[in-house]
Image 1 (cartoon, one colour):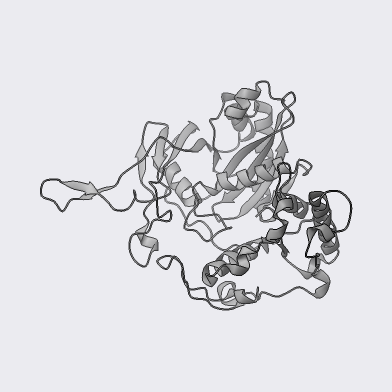
Image 2: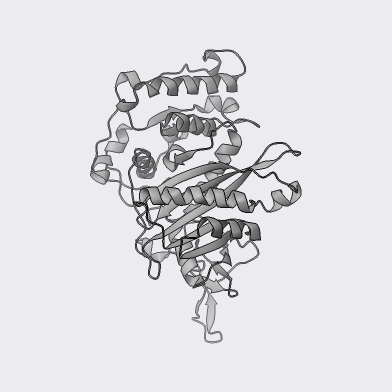
Length: 409
């Protein structure tokens, strides 16, 4: 943490990573250690943790005891750092337990943001990259906004984006959904609140549900009504003029009907399936230097942002690709190797330009506040909701409630 206060020059990804100026210079706020009462030291060996039961049970109890104690001095800190040594790895992750997800669920219970630290952070040799990643995470978890969406040409100012991700719960005879619905962003980059919603209607066909999870009309109406209320609560009761709903699987007709039921007051509604187009690849052709051929393959992938319209309701967009504008040395491909896959966008409801939907998906890949990469492989509306759905699936007793995303980062 002391190193975050200092400036560092990049030593990896030199064509992309800028110098790290120090936390205070970067965010105009001090990075301070909490008083000693807010520091809790666990024993070096997980076997020395108090309580009975196996190592995972004692670890969970230790986390809950620690957060309960820190809740009594809640005003002394903004973010809690938790160190899981590598020697504890046999207990931090198992078939039915994930310490990271359990910690996030406990943090949500006490409204305490947490930052997990493992041993790699102490040996990581690239100080600038480490500092960027930790500094951004801490700033966001302390309720800061590091960056936001720039105005998008053609997109109404009062536009909101909702991501849906589903997690099956229950046994094979009585499986049902927990739907993570994220009112991820409005156009000024705010929001980031989640509805953790448990579907009321049971699943009739488990095989179909696992292939293509979906909600009933009533459940879709209920979860989107709560999400719309979150937007209105943040925007003085005003409805969005346009609402784009993203999920990774196809929208069933019942879901579309439920969406339009809940959003009757919204002028424009788009239901967009956003999924990897695994069977598609692209090669970027440039002018050939040989006289016998007009073109030749470029040495870099298809440029990031390239869109190919497949039909009136379907398009491919390369969110991963060559991005020379962000590099100090020209061409820059974040993945370095392999040929990037495009995302496939399929519009199940709504109208308008598919290029506009692709532009929005592209912009939302840059809105993940939990890393220092140029982009995420999928829009943040998808990524954030997937993360919370995974946490809910791993921690089934997490109350169905509304949560800020920073508690789950």
